[in-house]
Length: 93
Image (cartoon, rainbow, N blue to C red; front, side):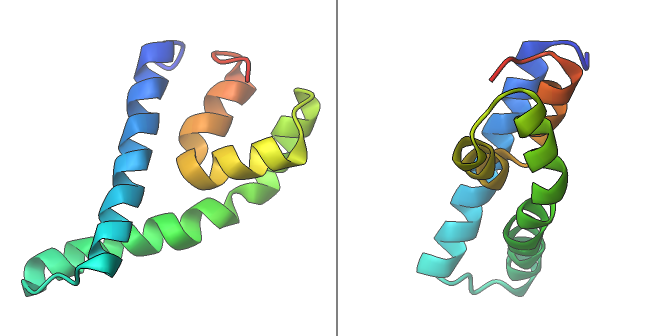
């Protein structure tokens, strides 16, 4: 499963979904308290988690010959679902 491109691309789509939920909650605040708690969890994970991964991702991107900008953008969008398969050699760029 970890060697499957499809698996990682599915997870990357989920990461984009997390961003969509995060942005939607900022644009149209959620009224239901239970949904708001879920949204806060997703938002905090995406908004704080992805930038924290940059330390690892930049080294992996450099070792694969990728530009800093490309590594930065992809890590902020996809998080570990992009840099881990890159490190494992499942995806090339």
